[in-house]
Amino acid sequence: MKFSKLDLLTLLISLFLFSSCKNSSTIGLDIDPNNAIKGILIDTVTVTSRTLADDPVTTYPTGVANVSSAGLIRYPLGQMTDPVFGSTVASLALSLNLPGSVYYAFGKNAVIDSAVLVMPYQIVPATSSSIAAGVSLFSPFYGDSTSVFNFNVSQLNQNLSTQTSWLSNVTYASTDQLGSMTAGVKPNTTTKVISIVTGGPDTAITVVPQIRIRLNPSMIQNKIINLDSVTLSTNANLNAAFKGLKVTASSTSKNGGMMFLDFKGANSNLEIYYKRQNATTATLRDTVVAKFPINAGTNPIAATVAHDYTNTQIAAQIKTPADYPVTYLQAMSGVKNKITFPYLKNLLTSIGSKIVINKAELVIDINDPTDSIPFKIPPRLALYRYDIANQRQQLPDNNPASSSNPSGDPRAALPFGGYYDPTKKSYTFNITNYVQDIVSGKTVDYGTYLAPTAASEFNLFDYPTSGGRAVIGSFNNPNNRKIRLNIYYIKSTN
Image (cartoon, rainbow, N blue to C red; front, side, top):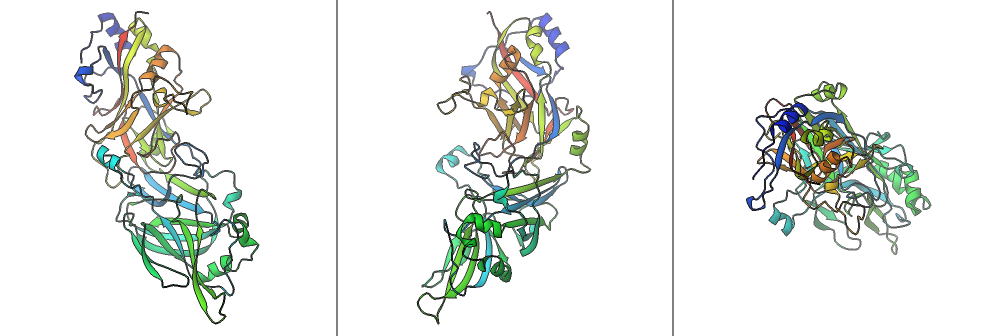
């Protein structure tokens, strides 16, 4: 790449306004020599980063981009203890739906045989295009895969369908314990179960990887099977009488982890196996299964996520903001970073003329490049900004204009970035248009924010749909593993 030299006056002013970086990292802009951009490089622009507690988010959003029509793409369940990031616990609150759209009848003299809560893992199948592109698919478990969990199921005290908010910091009270189980996690192992066929032989079938928790038969008999026909006529009546299930999973292991479950498909159910009198022969009994769907597309599913940073450096940074050598990022509405460019608005003054920015990239180095087993570095980060009303907005470089997004930015043409590069041990974002707008005074820097997001989707809010944590180098990191802004520009003659 060919660069012009800064004149002496510009260099002196730049040194005054911007922190010096004599030995800048080699991680930065990679451009094909055939497409080399002639311009001046500044890699000393001050970038500050602060660790902040992220905001709680709704866990039952409706009509939100990248979150589907209702509910989250996947839901967390588990407990993990990280020596750096403290403890994280996630529990679930589940609504039930009738086996049919309206009315369900258990039949005459129905007596329960067994009941099982079925919660499938969220599996993202590989495709030919993802294999060819080498894209890492989402893992339905984050943490120590050898962990063992104590699962507990109880009855909710409140009707989720009548709530108006399902924030991730809300705790849902429950009373009667309905079932429990101690087991490890097998997120990639299919299971064989017996399928009940009314009027025919039972059949062994293979089902998707799932968690199956047996519930107390007598309690399900009293709480569901014995409900009257009016109560079993609509989902609203059912949820008013039986307010749903609360599920917890506490780790018995040192590290633990987080499971991610699918409540969007047809495989999540409360399965009730029971016997009832044959419709034509009074002396015969039929064995029947009633599957009460647990589906976020019909009734609310909510998650509670609690982070405890007691006695960690994270707690100290949140309490006392300052320029620390490292800052912290954690998924599931854990901690984010506020990024600011305090002197960027003075760039034109220091250079002495208008400029055209050919390329601007924000590079974020992992402080310790060693992969953190079992709590791995997130495969992707999200970068967004606040507007004057403290509302989250896309950066112009990640907001391309289209027929479905007419208010987008027509300049957004290059890939936005944000994916982890395991070779360079860093993340890189293309923010050329955003920096140009700040330098030109078109946009005010009210704060730019960095947080983990799932590799398969980009969200402005840190929904609890993936795990991941990272310790990143700040601008003054003594090991030169740092966050920095590289700007390539030319002076404008206009």
